[in-house]
Length: 441
Length: 193
Image (cartoon, rainbow over all chains, first blue to last red; front, side):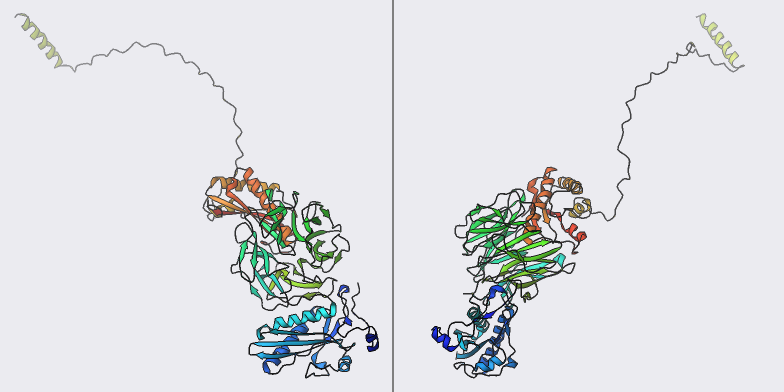
């Protein structure tokens, strides 16, 4: 499929006046549903400062914004060395002609104002160069320490102005940090910013931890840990550090995932004869409801964002396939019918797609399909990949990829919903099982 | 006493005679010689048939490195080096080899009842983490169920699935994968937990 971005015309001032369209109306618009073969050129000069500290911060903030936008695949960040105009005050219109010459389609001009030794104000304006109009103008109050997060918030605002969709830059990724050889691997739960900064471990111990998942509505995560002989699902509030074993079940509990409102957890539980079935736990009452009873393996369940439907993995048909059911366990329906094995389905936060792992012929792929099983589309392929997780806006998928053989190791990758823009995600070391947080509050 | 001189004289005579010739021993009288008792042949007893004994094979050889019987090392040794049984791709049923190995394990566990075991179920890398956790659980359960069927008390056995998290062979080929699809009987001392 072709990827394109388009600018909704170069309306004349006359036309704009005639239609009484204000200057705040976006003229530059990027269609992210079609992917992107032609990233929009954007200029992000260093933010202006009034002293050494603010000038340095201004440079760092602009760098982070450029990197965020560039990584999205929708933008091409122009080299600051090519800029003709050097603005000294962002309260005046830029010289649009100077930016058109270097083929910039959008310009971000910002400045940092020091209000006290511990308080700064970060301001920026986003300009549509062809239309010659301001698309956004925002101000953030913060402390100098929080400059990086402020930059991500600016990136989100720029992304939203130009695409009409929420951004995902002010967010984090929880993942499993991996060390040691394949046959003696150590795995630890860790978290980092979405761009790989500020990595830290979340648990003190060295117990094996797998499959962390973020609550879509709070700073809580759920994961599976081998802290006791029988592995179980745990809950961790990453703000308070409070960790809790969920339930008191004799068998293994695993494959946990939050509902989109964060009030329920869906997971697999090992029952009689080690048969895995799917249960919902209400996190307020702690009551559990069993949703599957089939003697086959039922695992890897994921809620639709409206909480009404569930997609899950089952081999009841003889091989692992994807099924949907209502949230009360009724109306089970197979939705995957292609060649190969289908595993690990994850419903998009937008509700329009299900990402999953497909395997066969010695290859694994991250693929997507509509919730009714139509429009199946393969996004990636390699020796081994798994664990797709969605960006908060449902436009990007990150996953882990493992290389082949005795020296095989895991890394984290991202790809657009369209299959474009495959990139390695920065992690402090080898890593697997990524899970994206919601946008930070 | 006229008689006395005669008696004396006879005695004198006798003594005089002795003095001239050595006396001859009296002949001792023996029982009458008769014919020997008749010889009769003994009757032949009926023997039970020879019982077929098990074939004689080479007896246990002395291995100076063999572990102390009843030790955890001995369990592994008696299990053929490593107490693991292997499964087919995406399968959790026991092969005949696996059953034979588990019979030995069960016998050992019954001989040494102070030990318990954690049965670990493992999968190869060709599958997603969660599906493999479910599959590993089934493999561990197959091993446990067979040991129980051989008389090991279920209270001495617990199961845990490691899915594909505990490969023993790093190779990404059938040789490696076939080793990584296993049920591992991990002996522990005392109670589990």
